[in-house]
Length: 152
Image 1 (cartoon, one colour):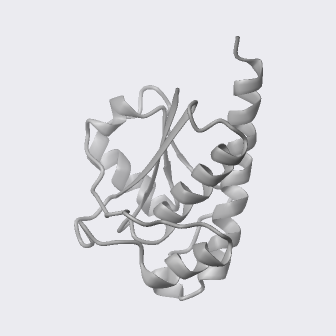
Image 2 (cartoon, one colour; image 1 turned 60 degrees about the vertical axis):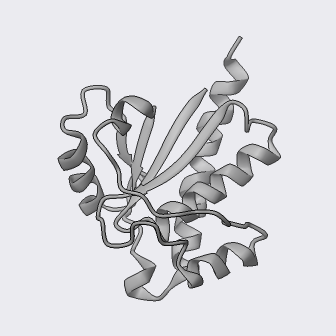
Image 3 (cartoon, helix red, strand yellow; image 1 turned 180 degrees about the vertical axis):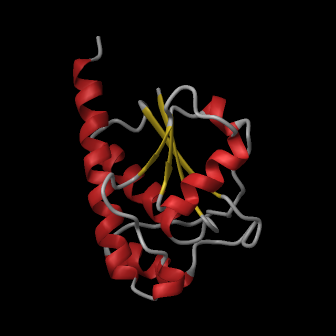
């Protein structure tokens, strides 16, 4: 089982969007029993809150629900619990490392290798966030599917 944790600042926009996009991809490919996906925040500002309405609307436009999500904060213990911890921007990566400490296993990385995903809570551009997150999740899914295809 591959365990993936998406992380953003508040866990109400980008990281839950990534969580539910990747969950849909793995479910459609019949890999939901091989991949566990979750999300978390680096801050405490939104703890317990659902997905932000405009992010929820963007997901819904693509046939993806996110009912039951409640923002939670990343913990140091998450480092040992997940195979990958994926941030959306450089500030997220810095904050992840501040919370979990060092990254000796190379688990922490950005979703897009060459681009930060702007926070749509600030930019109000949820379509751009969707496009970037979907592209990152597609690349990640292709990695996962390739690994699953080579597993015995």
